[in-house]
Picture 1: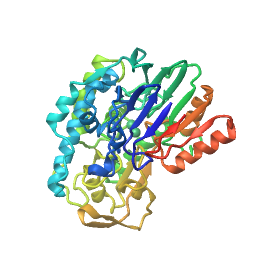
Picture 2: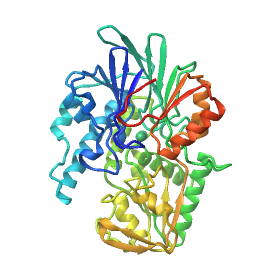
Picture 3: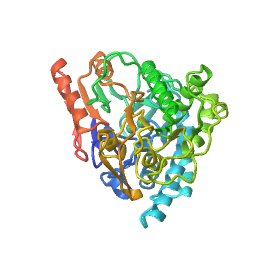
Picture 4: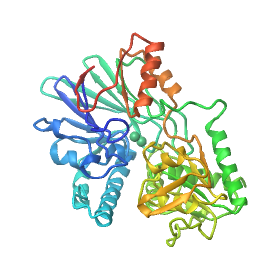
Length: 452
Ligand SMILES: [Zn+2]
Ligand SMILES: [Zn+2]
């Protein structure tokens, strides 16, 4: 297998791989870097010039896996785009949102290069989307070779898939973003048993030390206790979330908690794409068994629009729970504004429930201490940090020990490290060298082809 990582900045960013098996070429994902904008945020697609790709596979609908897909389809006019049936229901909606965000950036930041693609282009792209049911196999033929493609549920988020490729008796597996444990809204991964020749493994949590005795359930209880204490002392809670998946998961957790009288009485504020996607999740839940979600939770929780008149740095008058994106508190998002309002006041809490890149404002908040000055530069607001900042492990990515266990059970000849910061990849490289030195471990350099 020839593999080329097209994610120009490495790490977790614009996920995009070119895989060549015999004379069959497949692209897996084509994302957008969540912290960057414009061309810098896209994968480098120039190595594809003059090449015809036979198939494009989308593992799931997070922006770091789909955000540059229209640019790829502009260059590759024939290849069909294959994804799970849930992803097929969500993908165009996510891309349309991306266009709207880029149009806003164009106005607010005078970025003449944006948007990178238009709503019309997204509609044209959608005509090339094909759904492939989990467990069903699609054969792709080149001039000489055949490759069989099968998708398997990867947990993580609605419709997320691991990708199994078979070529000449070789058996290759891309984990994609994966969670083995079940969440309230999405069941855990169900990957095929048996041996894989090569595994391309996500490594998001390689540098995250597991805390003994903490389970998803105990973390949910700790989160509810923290929310209740904060509300009781007159404060507000910000929970920065990804709109796709985390948002609906947290709404469902709060709904169940309120039914069981485990959640304090207080308003829940939320708005934007996450709320809009509730309708899509409701639809996905009806049409597939991939998600357990009902949009009726919004009504039951009396979810309200985030107040429009929040002033940067000023504590909101009405305390409550703010469930807003982005999950990493990226500049010019609702969570960035709400964070600036809450951070300077001791009765408030910012509760992180997912992965935060260290270079984002969310990562910077997590690394800060009370009393530090924190600059919300995009709002021209500096605050002295006083609020409680907590992290809860409700991540949609598998822990490093589970990933090691999964990989070693499949007895692979080769492992390719993927989707992780350099420290995360280094942990896996060391761990494989220690526990299974016969396995060839590759950490590909972006834009440098490797033969596996
Ligand atoms: Zn993801
Ligand atoms: Zn990802």
